[in-house]
Length: 409
Image 1 (cartoon, rainbow, N blue to C red):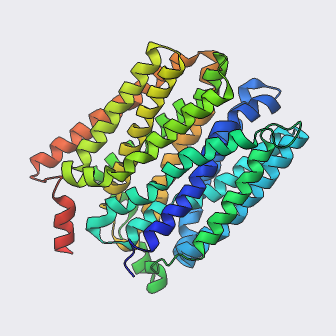
Image 2 (image 1 turned 90 degrees about the vertical axis):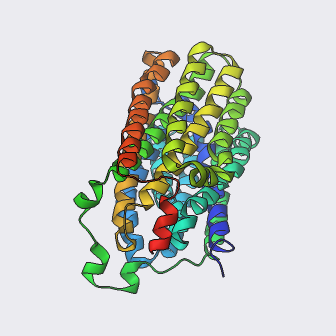
Image 3 (image 1 turned 30 degrees about the vertical axis):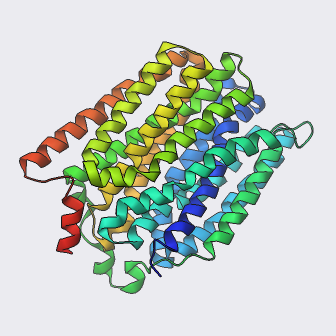
């Protein structure tokens, strides 16, 4: 059966469930951390631990799946997510901050594996369809925009005396559904399983692959784009609470932010094919600038809402664009080590960003959080222009490159 009719939709369903859980955590984790932590500078430590665990998982996850296959690795990792949800609920009920941190780490391990859903989809289809496959899998986040924050709100007080404990019980149900969906997926065998020779599994040296301008641009846009998004987004619940907004207001803003992150996936892949990946990456950087400008103009719910929608679309263009660009820089036998390197760098930045967001917000305020994002956005825009001009000088048409690669194959 065509992968677009079976594999991609199932991976999109898994993505929807995982991102629903992640959006629930994003909406609640800083608030739970603030309630449980004696030292308020540790408020965002649980969220940062989540991303640190993702970062530390990316490399071993890639090599585990290289040897066992993606499906087996994906299914095994759900055990960590389910355990994390259970421990988080108990930690909240017992008011144990450090156990809540541990729970976030376990969820991070699971998410570290799940982040390869997009690569699994891209590697299952032809060159021409890679950007569309990535976009379609990321569409699962549209469901997450509604499920995660709303589940958090509905279950917030479901366990008396332990706000949000019920939300993390619901996290367990989401991850069990993910496991069920994974049992129906059929993914192609990895090159190292199909051919066990060392040479086949290694490919070119990483240094040679990393020397490509397109690889460097993919890393810059993916790493900084995700870092900026995490930095600003993690601080939003704290900033809105500082301005005495209700949790329902915060949930509303986060919901629309996540919708902004994933709804463009309906057309991002087609935009990349029509206008070229460089133009979409540049547009992502510009939209990030718009987000910062709106946040610096005021602190009303409308300001938070508009800014976070723009930030979501910015992330979508940068992340899908960077992922698409990255898939053009390696051969099939090199996919795991390059994908692992990419995600390790991305989530190292995300961990640093989420950990520092709380300190920035408490010490310097909301304006400083946004001003701090400006240099990184500048680096993205300058890098895109440099690589775009270099490609133009070499006579490469970004709009036709993917099609040409398919023809050559």
